[in-house]
Length: 83
Image (cartoon, rainbow, N blue to C red; front, side, top):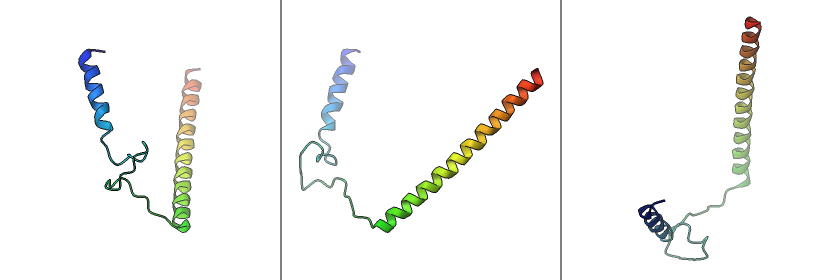
C-alpha cells in the first residue's frame, strides 16, 4: 500500500467520525442530530410483514427447486445421450 493510499484512508476514517446519524453508537447523545428515528409499529403490521416475507421465501424456494430440478434433468439427459 502506498503512502498516498494510507493518507487517503486516514482522511476517510476521520470523516466517518463526523457523521451524526449514528452518533448514539459511540455513546454521543446529540439532541440536535436528526439521526434515524424509530417509530413504534403495531403488532398487526409486524405480523403482516412477517407473513409477506414468509410467502416470498416460499415462492423463492419453489423457484429454486424448479430450476434445480430442470438442471438435474438436463444433466441426466445429456449423460444418457452421450452414453
